[in-house]
Image 1 (cartoon, rainbow over the protein chains, first blue to last red):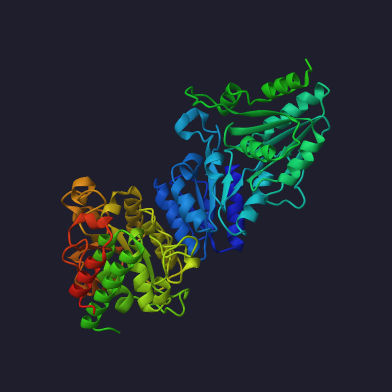
Image 2 (cartoon, rainbow over the protein chains, first blue to last red):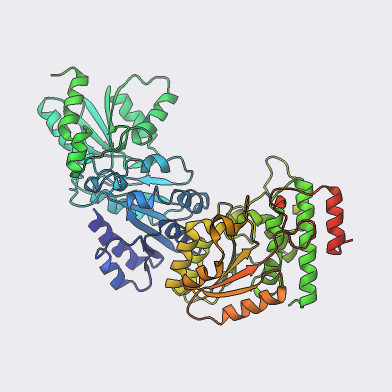
Length: 309
Length: 274
């Protein structure tokens, strides 16, 4: 997905000369094409993320559209106050891009995991939180982010993520969920690249006779409550899947919505990272399996909850 | 253009207004405000290319008060310079009003403000971004910043200096209001050490060291800084916290204390305000 991001931002930059790319000493060859085609619009800000975000705010206040790019924990947790004050409080058009989100860097240990980024950014007014399920959503969302007001956080995967949409969704907007797969019995609501596991689980569930709908809630903030109404009305059993701590991410956002309503009788199963750090090193798949976020685990728990062996 | 005596006159008037505002509204950080009045005076009444009737002029010089708790000093300066009415600042501080509080608001709330500082370490990086914009677009404006010496505890200040010097942002001119105190201790004893000047020099700035309470020294330093073509300028300005009022000078109680009526009258007398 980071390659697709690099391609897309280069493409957009050729038509919009306000796009300015700031990187935290990362993306070694990734932006070569961007740099070649755009003089004076790429800046390596070094391993100094607080300053990078502040500089982005200065550029945005002056009329440019900065894009800040580094590994997700460093573009979020590391410079959180700068996001809160310089980006959100000033409501500046800064596009904050985190690459290798969730457990994508499971092999590097907890310093490089980001299972809290949605949670820590969600409280801030003015921010849009966008977690594309696949490269198609990423390209569409990036284009929109670079035209809108205010700060936008884009939560990327790393590499090799397949396209899950069969074709480009029509009328794609930030803030409105998109159907990845239609079904009748159970609904999986998901955000980000882990949607691939939702799709695989849906296939497995289908083979067990359980028709499964998968909905990409790529935008966690603002949350598409219309879509939630529709889905909670249609499906008795809803699974919520995210590559993020169970507390504070998409599940929490939906729970907040649900608690305000008086008529929520659905069975909701949450799939997220539990309240612990993962000390063991391994691949992303190892990490996701470890936390029960792989398609087998998802399928099993959904079947159990339906009382189907 | 103002002459030196008239600039000193303006500085005295600003000092009085800051003290009066603190007395009337209970706003703290008086010592921090008073130490940088001369820098603000030199900038807004002589050196900066600004037009208060056109605060968003893209070609304007920019000013960032990175030590945002000195906002009362900035508010008084902007009012006297004509960005808004002094009478606005005379309103009582009460709940729910558009505030002239302890820190600058975001720019759309008050003409003349470039950034909502108040958390230390933010103003300089933002100013660096604005200076970078100027360089990218090859524009003439200068970006001035006042940073506190206590504020230099924050790592982001040094990140900004390193970045600014690497990017050769020569139109970024930074004053460090070196009043030797921070909130609870002498700044030398907390983290700044005894050779503060060398730290800035080693970060690649064109570094000067001046009497930051002398308007003529400030003006000379700015003129020298404007001649630098390849690095940001860092003007380490030795100031006195509480400068201008004898019983406040170098007394760190005035970081938080606000003056009573008698102290206000004494201040007026010392500043030559009737």
